[in-house]
Length: 282
Length: 288
Image 1 (cartoon, each protein chain N blue to C red):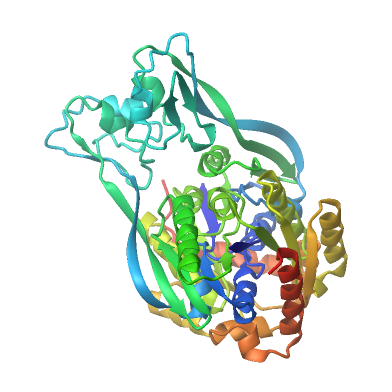
Image 2: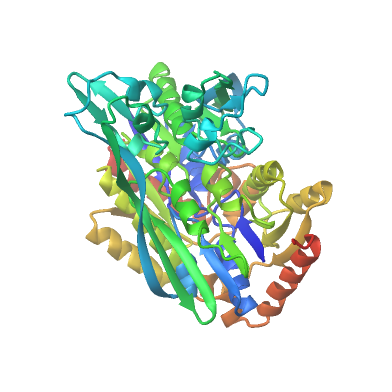
């Protein structure tokens, strides 16, 4: 139906607050995918009953040395230095491998097969009518995008999908924003917030997706985020002023819409604005 | 030479503000911004750039339509589905594995090196600084982090400085792993929230995985003293040194808005005093 991805550039601006509260405010026919697989937090607020856990692996090469002739073609094709010929053996470096399958395809002796490297887990659960999915990257695993793509495979076409993206602007963020119908960028009115917002807007422009802003702790800092939004023609969808009650509720894992129910209306209004900003997809 | 890397797991806990404050009080140090994806330290340090270099890393496939016979082998081999039915490579999806280029029977695929960012050597009012800017939506941030830390080290060696202060990225993935390897110690900036604790635990496990001495400090500790206590209990159990607590203090935002460190803005603020103590503990721990 519609995919809304929530991103920020800078970390700690309130992505998870916006994603979880929007999802809960919508009541039913909505799914929340937490794609911040390095540090997933949405479950701490949604507190879903986890119904299904899947271990996700990425294919990496395993070499049958009985068949290998040490020709070195696998090392030659690998762009990631993930497989090398040393003396009379071929040594794969699993943590460097991008799972492209090039070594296996090029091996003239068919000496390479693929085994799995664990990337992490994908957990699926429910809270009331809300469907919840997140990924948890294995500690020590470097590559999050393949796990993010696995989480996104749970997207259902018949419902509203809300994605909580990781901070930054590089590959994990792109993996969390691609194919979305709309991006909510959560920022704060500080120099760091503005600087990283500009980077995030740049990423959204490259992907060609409509976006709008949520300004969190809107009454701290300065006016430069609003000036920038006006110059760039970016819609301000919602502002959340700093309120110690909100900060304290957040610290305990309580949701804004539960603690201050008047916020539910604000989140629903934001959704209405977003729907008005994107052309219906058919 | 020693290197302190400030990390957090969760973003926005105050890594950069804290590191900038350390830069004010530490002596004989080089600075390094290893959060290349959303680098912010320069907003406080106002570096004067002395050297500017392109960061070249990774390749992207480009199909030459004049040579391409649309045989389809590349689309079959590409595990990223980066090649369209019209045989155009989507450069954002392309992983740079080169498999298509290697196997193309017509040699119709170019595989040029990407320029995916810039890195700089600069001078600041607190000493020399190595920093970078990864291009938006680019890959290889881990490699750029590794490069920038090597440059930071070279800077410190050249100028005979005993310490490198490195601002790390959030998360636990590739850039964070790259920012920690070989560090003398990491300092985790945690916040006393359920998400702050969750993320601190994960990044602490990562540091333990790489066997790096780990310290933790708690920012905005008074927001939830119970959670603060939980963090300190966790630290004690895991052989992590708790080096101090910082109160919630608007001075941090005020300093940032003016492009100053908290010490420059108001050295007598509660926030500044707390950081001074933390720095003393960190110095002692690291034998500075």
